[in-house]
Length: 115
Length: 109
Picture 1 (cartoon, rainbow over the protein chains, first blue to last red):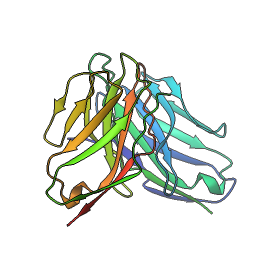
Picture 2: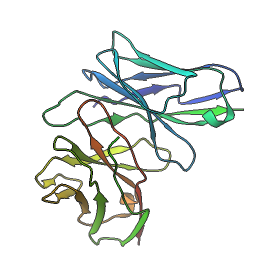
Picture 3: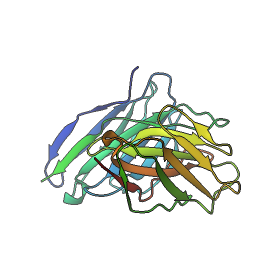
Picture 4: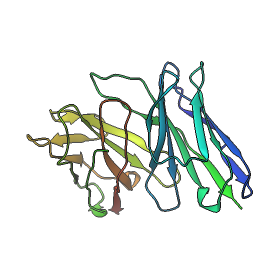
């Protein structure tokens, strides 16, 4: 079965540069989530989108922005990168099912290294 | 965000059952209880979820307390491949999945 696709898998950027991560959800999924996981840390929720609209906002820095496009893929844009932004970034998707509860499915993540 | 509390780590012998507890005393009536597990450098993997009744699937069982303030993930026979960090999380109405500090499970051969 098709899974959540993230690209690129690995990315190296210098401080103060900009990076963009892409996420392609499972077909027919209408909701996308972004998480950041630093070394030895638990996944931290950044932001989510439902039907192309932002639905929830977590600990996303102001330097970061994200959007979901008409084909439901999502992009996380990170500007003025700092060393502390080095982390594994996960995208997840789900199909909104308020009755049975959402189950979210994660991609394999994008490794961002800021040097 | 809804809070969950889990032990930092647990150990189990291979082929023995494992009971992973989770407290969620502030759970609301519409919150689902979800369990995910994560292997190193991989995305979290869905294990099981439930609302009020106990649930079983091919991976595990979920036992939910009658007052829903706690739950237990049960792995019936632990294998080495079950060694992972297990997260208990609550899905509130809307799209909120917050991961707390999970339980690192070590399986001893």
